[in-house]
Length: 529
Image (cartoon, rainbow, N blue to C red; front, side):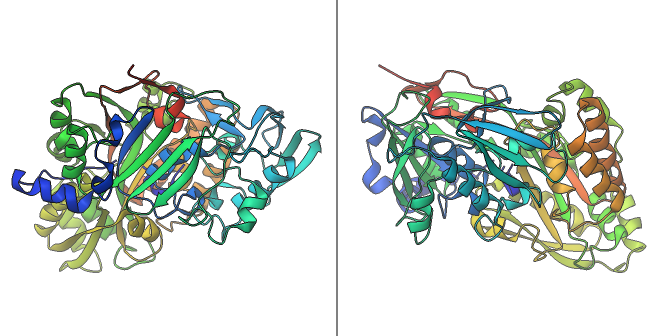
């Protein structure tokens, strides 16, 4: 459920071969000491496209933060390989009205220091999750006014201010809850930092963390879920995709996630490598901030939207690793309960500003800035496919008199600016981390949406869908909210994405699905004998 889960892909251009060795030394900080570590028995090295500034996902909800969180942290519930809710620290749960939720806490749950998980720890973690100061990136997932209390020796009851059928996803480590030990958290000067690390209940415990370099986790031996194949999981952070490609080719890393589209064939050519591609249930589009001029003018928004050639971007830049988006919610996500085909049909008639430069010029002529204007579009450096698409958009905008500067930024900085009002035009790249049919729309059209868009009809529909127990009625509410927003060009949908992951010959996933990295995935790997 990341704001920019952002979620939610990474890509980079291939530099000249002569630059590759220099890039490996300069951009893969682990390369100096990491050589050969992937060959160590029991160690799995994962190369991530970007870096973390903290291990505390509540402070940074990028998609790779969620990948890392799955080895160390758990919520009350988890998500299985089919995108369904499953037990975690809660061995069972029930709700009769979607407003009162009862969770039975697993009596054998332990933290990674060997201490038992208590009701006090769980309630403390829920308090932290709801606190916008302590959980600035995820507190928004919790309805204001939510109450949690002990209701038995090993039981808690959570009462919501209104029914919410999707609340089960909120209490997962994919959503907005990471159960921690109260005494550890309170004694930490900076929870999630290299000095304090993090304390969870997952299969691996954090042993070292160097922002912009590496995070290392070792088997805890305390996980209620049993044994796991690897003794050590090592995450290496790469700011340069060429360096990561070389690291995989030389055996320094075993897994490379979110491969750049242009590099998929090169990973496939590595001896013994296996590249798997799945929908990642991601949405990519442009966001127009209504509080920043001139994007408060619908004619400006439509002028920009009409200048976007989605079909060309998907075919030439993504090379088919995506689908032209007709709405906000990916069909695989919206259709998790009614079926993907039914979801696609429901969104097929949504209004969208199709590529038409003449229409773009006409809209701009009616706007408050008929002579054009200057703007900037930033993108995270770990997702250069967004940069390539931005340059394509900039070329078309130049033809109608809009000068668009395209700027790359570190992903941490980019995430911090999403919805902040810093820019009138921005990207939204959101990868769903749960099976909630309304996850993307709930964020992009909800009360804290990054476009700062206010419409009472849309807000009522978003509230209504959260309380709907009939899946078809819920989808109808979501699609109607999308229709109103797209009529007003609040967002300009670009594509629904796919992602590719490379596995070396040393390691293989046992159940690889679109939800793989949103499960305790380290327990679903096989190591070569």
